[in-house]
Image (cartoon, rainbow, N blue to C red; front, side, top):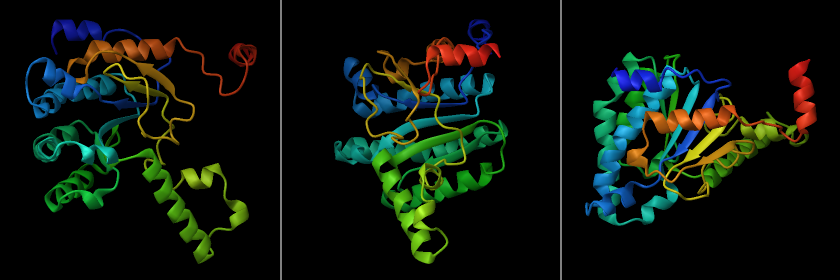
Length: 255
């Protein structure tokens, strides 16, 4: 670790989020600004991915969920989609052993049926290899949408009712949430979006119900350790009320 990076990561931050989600936006604009193909921006974004993983591990965050490819991204130019799929293959072939050696568990969330056979096999191998790792829980959302997640959870809920293992009267928020992707992880505490846009773009719709949102103009390939630390510091200064008043929260803190 360089001296400069050590200084960045030396900052004590409290409280920290347990689970951070990131909408990695701005790869295409980064490439366009440099008169490069869009695929070059996605490849450059890998350095930002490595930076946020390294920072999350340093601060011992429990979970990190990255939005890599949405269900709507299939509408992008065919060459860009192919380049993205090739990049997924590259990453799964080259980075998984490193994740495993750092005790990181990798999961891919989303509808895998549309992914090609080679990619599905690589995903299965990566998940099997890292399944028992107890460090950072790293989730990559690929061919994912929040609406799809809720629909697939609802289907499972309906099947449970049809089989008689669940009564209609017992359906509540917790029951539905138990069928969502990454249901075993804490709710998302902080959601970061790079690239200057101010929306969540169909990402983790259920899981973001009480999430703190952090928007930054920096394009994803330029988002590095310091930017992530800044977002964690910003989170630590927020008061999370969950429907209560500030006075109630202060009273609970003083008790």
